[in-house]
Image (cartoon, rainbow over all chains, first blue to last red; front, side):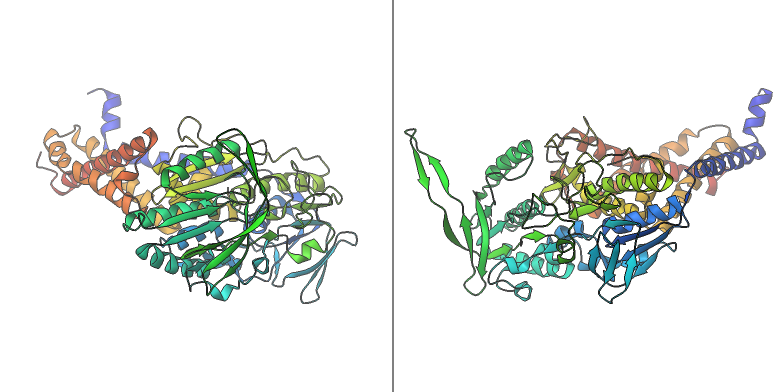
Length: 457
Length: 116
């Protein structure tokens, strides 16, 4: 045995090596922390309206980046809702509590939380007024209110109908999603007509109505009731998804699953006791076999259902629509705020930024987009305060783990230009139904989301 | 995903298992690895007999790991789709097999140090 081998083989040397390695690791970690950017000193007053995914993630980043800033978060909601979990709750895979945590659990000590809703935003006087009358003057405002579900936009519908007569509403919240599961479980055991649709407005997670259709189809098959059932998907326009290549893939999958797809159908109202839904159907032109075309005028169509997932129109919250921040030429009935699509800075009020669903941008009302909004807004805001110019831009990134059955999904990621932008190119194919994409949705998504809330991802 | 750094990954795993359980698992895995390295250095050799004994448990580790992941993720074998799914699937099985083999080898070596 050589001298070197003897040293390596001795127990003392082994323990020494192990201890040394541990010390080296902790030193490396310490060095990594020390390398993070120094905080910018400022007295700026920053108000963040909304404590959802955007507001919470943002406040955790800002308290690290700024020193001495007066950061105030305004939101009366005591519960934080993990909205991507609603589909899993309504699929019977998770309990309602899966999506619920406390707003306060995520907030840092370096910011103030005003537990009231915003009642007014005055971008000229630079003041946010709360429902309790508190006036919060600001130097910078981040609008992260999320959006409002306009249940009144569906005639004859009210939320107390959910959980009875085959009526579900996955979007309405965790308890409603659980009630929807009860109805769906019952429906798929018996079979019948399952009716699904989406609103004609911009909406959060535009993939969710499709996912739920796939999941219901899967349950019907598992329970042996698919043959005696009809699954109808009524799309608001001529596509299934805003990204053409994804839309075409979904059409193929719907053909494969035997989904009866109807186009240009916009939900007008429902009759809960009769179990029917009425749709406004836009004028259509149908090509005949002989090459001629038949014009079908606009009409209303009533469809009977045994189970339906009601999704209402979605709009900016009233406080935002009344603030003068909304887009002046687009989405006039919806009120999304007029921000630069790349910097997310308001085009008329440079000290105001938009974060999340409230932004008037062509894509991205998802938590995945929020994850990309946060560093962009952070960069421009902190640069403004430090007297420099921000450079980060948002490219429209949106991610949609499109569940196609329990156990499989397509990890669809795209940008403003309808390009597919896969996170793992060549490894996870975006338009392929894969188990790994399901694993991501089921296991990794909530932890990633929570890490984002903490400002870590 | 915006950026996949080690810090992000650790944060994600902390959220999956909970901070306490995750670091307990990391420490446990680290201890088993250290234990394995310790007995190798102590004995100056890899005992073929112990290794063969330990390998008996490898299929158990493989099947156990796969069943656990399928159960934990509400999936079934039929959900395995494209090549990446098979790679992940094989990876889970190999990790389970390897992990249990190393654990059993280390356990034998520590419990019965003279018998080799």
